[in-house]
Amino acid sequence: MVKVKRTLNDLQKATRELVYTNQYLRNYNQLPIIEMLDEIKHLVNNKVSDRWLNINEVCDYSGLSDSTIYRVVRRGILKASTSTGKLLFKISSVDRWLNNG
Image (cartoon, rainbow, N blue to C red; front, side):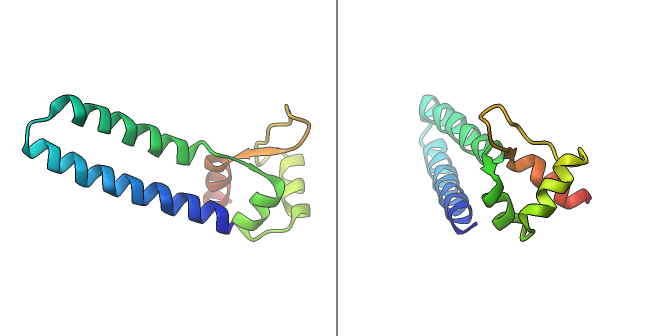
């Protein structure tokens, strides 16, 4: 969970720096650079919400045991991918489950 938070904090800091740079460049009419920064900001924000977590990371992230996670997956409440041979969860799905559950 610490690694996820650290990565999220790094991305949020980078986003703030991009916003500041974007505002600075708008003052000097550097439109092509501004458009590229907007695209980078969009990609960074999408990357945070689409990250995949394994079962241990979901346990750390949610504060729940692995047996609880397995149980909600078995019941079909929480979606998980098994295409790699292990359970992988989209962080957005975990957030949705935690907020609605």
